[in-house]
Image (cartoon, rainbow, N blue to C red; front, side, top):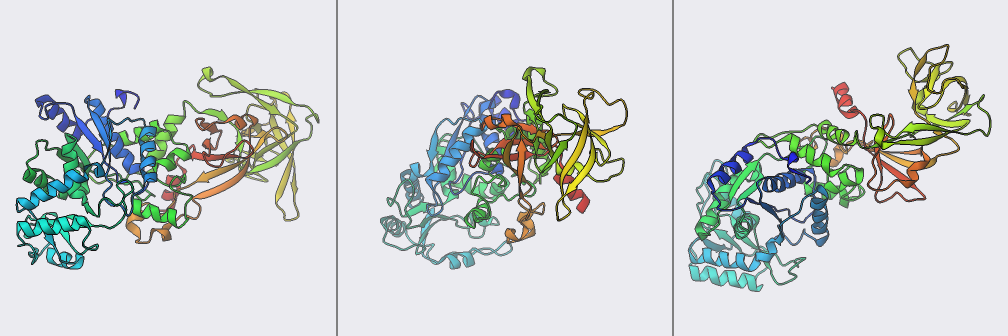
Length: 559
């Protein structure tokens, strides 16, 4: 994070923290945490949480812990942990320390025994289905388990034998003893430990019982001295349990849990479980596929950390559920790249143009600015030859006056070069246009022709001095704005045109492109080389975003 000019605009969380700091409620610095579960790659929704937690702590002179909630060993891995570390760093943040829930397994086990000793927890031998049946519903209170009356000694014995591995998965669980008649179902004797005979990626086979999230999270917060535990609205109903655990154990540090709305971004999924299916079934090219809403996917596509931070700041912090338009995110990256991206020319769908009256073998070096609004970015030399490529979409054999590109018998300017006129159209055996014959006016370099009206300006590259490149154009992965809502099987809503590959021709200088470079292909959008597939022998460019919000306009036309 560059500086405090990126701080969040006024919101209710900032107001709470400001009041707490003013009254010295927590007797020290503001301490937050970002606690992802390492069971997948982080997505844009996590980016919002990262920016909020790290941003708020930094703004108030505090610090943030990065904690991995690794209490479900069957789904977690070191790969996911490492990817999360890279994502947080890439976004521009640094943590105070890295912690893991597994670091606290011994303490958590002791806390669980303390609850048992206090008569506030018991080992239940009901099956999972029976526990659900006994829990009741939103309109019906729950019923006490027949094992709820076990003595402290019995519960300690069973719990220690669970830890020793005497029982199979699901045979027993440890439950908090609260109130089976509570209107809040989360308070109806929630499970706080279960048996899982699965090796853990950090602790191996040391443990075969693992604490549940609601038990682990609040205690980890307390042991780390977290002052403000920021989370999303789905945990609002869990807050009474968060407070109950800390109150019953009478810990010195009692963090304040504060909930705000999660990010819902159109045309995306915000579920690691559902995103993992796309990866596992080969529907996308891994977690960092540029169509994925993961931070790694945005990074590979060419988004900048500044644009993601800007987006997270602009959408704000509220209690209201929101559904952010994809165009809002795209506008953030456009605004970020517009002043800094060098301009170049790339022809995505090449059509050869032969300029018949241009001397054969002649070559000129024409001057083109690297940025039309920033002279300090300098100029580049663009070779002009008798044969050039233009984009096939920039030609029609005939068109009305509103068409501002090349037509038969019409005049058009080649960007930074001359005005040309199409005199003949060559077609192949199938009737497809294969080549254009044109004439140029040598007096029109930098000025209009003496006669005739120029329809518009189009981009081009020399047919003799260019590089071939694969250019990948991306559209939303899903064809509907809210795939999480509209179908249980989201695969049925996949957009078949989410990836289109073009065999393009680009300026010679792009052979030197690096991973850090961002370019505006004039009239086409913003591009960068693909971090995985682009090589010196085979250029591959990803379109980061188009110049306009074409997807939103298409949606309006459909409706």
